[in-house]
Amino acid sequence: MKIVSWNINSVRFRIDIVERFLREVQPDVLCLQETKVIDADFPFETFRALGYEHILIHGQRMHHGVAIVSRVPVSEDDRFDWQANREARHIGVRLANGVRIENVYVPAGGDVPDREVNAKFGQKLDFVQRMTDWSAALDCPTILTGDFNIAPLPSDVWSHKALLKVVSHTPVEVEALDRLQASNDWIDLGRHFHPAPARLHTWWSYRSPDWTKNDRGRRLDHMWATGDVAKSATRHHVFEDCRSWIKPSDHVPIMTEFAF
Image (cartoon, rainbow, N blue to C red; front, side, top):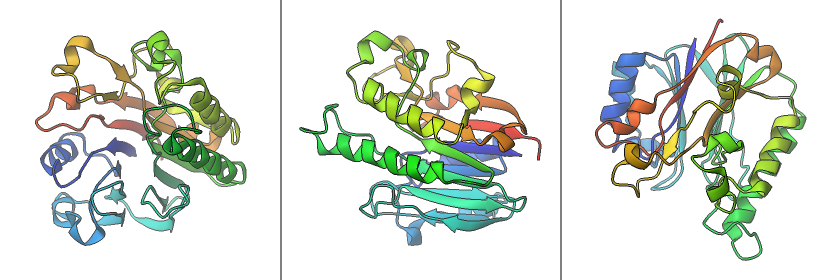
């Protein structure tokens, strides 16, 4: 089974590259973040025409939004309000084999890494803490994936030294993500198959006119699994070439293959 996560940064605006990706890679399950569309306007027919009959969405006008589309049966399981303000940032499903897939879009956190002067940063840390509380009580086989908006390891960014005070790689964020990972002994599948310091970037800013020239990437997108599920993982891939497609997202898809 191929499970993909992709912050698409508007599913309707980028539906052409989504369709291309599905045709070329043919994943079984696609988890999308930042769909930026209300539920009624989601492009259902495009996905159904490609064989993705099972579509579960949690939309919001213009901002945020998550979705899971699948060509294998899934049932909706949960929608957690880890932001505590009803933003559409999570949707979870259960596969027929009982494995849960939790698709999450963690807040970016603004520009200043200080919760006293930047409320968005505090909201991000609180979001991750609510995830940690949920994780600590989790007792079923689970895949946790999405845009975590945190690059935890020094090799997860183009320059550890340059980004230590930049939101997404600050020590306080990394420590928060470490606590989340430790709360249920999550296996980071990206680094399981591509141990540090291997290159494994998933995001490049739109601000650069040529992202390949300065190559200032960060690994913001992750796929984790509880230990029982991680044993079934066989491969993890980052589709870096997608960053050069027409009208690309600033994120690229990541995919883990499982032997179940």
